[in-house]
Amino acid sequence: MHTFKIFEKVLSTVNDDNFDNIALDLFQLQAKENKVYHKYLTYLGVNMEGITKPEQIPFLPISFFKEQIVMSGQWKEQTTFYSSATTGVTPSRHLVQNVESYLQNTKRIFEGFYGAVSDYHFLALLPSYLEREGSSLVAMANYFIRQSKSPHSSFYLNNKKELIDKLKRVDHLDRKVILLGVSFALLDLAEEHELDLSNCIVMETGGMKGRREEITREELHQYLGRRWNTHFIHSEYGMTELFSQAYAKEKGYFRTPAGMKVMVRSINDPFERLEVGKTGGINVIDLSNIYTCAFVETQDLGRIRQDGSFEVLGRIDNSDIRGCNLLVG
Image (tube, rainbow, N blue to C red; front, side):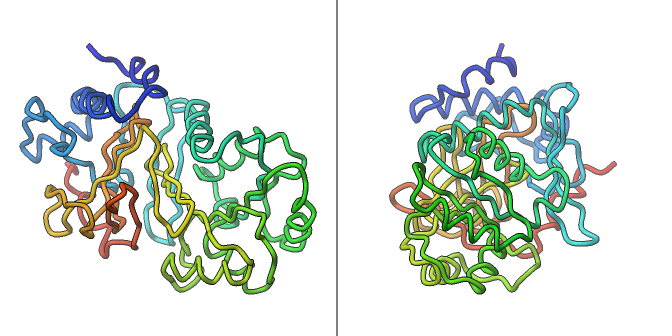
């Protein structure tokens, strides 16, 4: 009988060969031990024992994280992550069973893409996230800043002049530099300052968060590249409801770490899986969500490319309608 502790131990050993079996075992455990997910599967009439491949697994609509306590097993949370939300909109909440496990997972994933955290100076421009409590992105960035042990790694809120001075100062030091920023803040900075960041990794985390008119990722990257003399803008794809992140080193073509897999569903039928190249809603298997739900139906629009990477093309309209009220009562 699989237990949650077993999945903690195997998480760092996930690979292409064993991913499906681990995902199916975790599904069977969460289908029984997660009250919200179990009730949702029962509502759908799913024969849980008949699920034999990941493509058959029903994904929990992300909206449940707004209205329900999504928890597998019984435990007391160390903290709770909250999504950003406009006034009057309920934020998502993701209970965290062990904060250190989350942080170590983010570091393991980052280093799988970029090498040791200690090789970088991290300059984090995350104003909308720093201004509220419970941001998983701020927790991750703060951990990288501390783990880098660099005197130059820091957060920046409204002190843009200090950030510009720091970017110039660390340009030719002993480490690489990452400017990690939310999209609207990077755009604001680029409009005000034309810079040479050709030696810097500029990484956007997406989202205008209601601060500016939405533009496509391609438009954002082109503008930042022109203003800052850099050919490629990197991207990070994560969310409150996931404990793992995907990264794109160019053109918004994201790749997932070993414990994360993306599928695309039909907009008209959420249980229909689409082929490579077709545009639809993004579903994520995140094996790091051991104690909540590893099978999340997001409200992002995207497609999987022939080489296995995926693109995020925007948001699905009316994203808060489906799912929220199914389990009320």
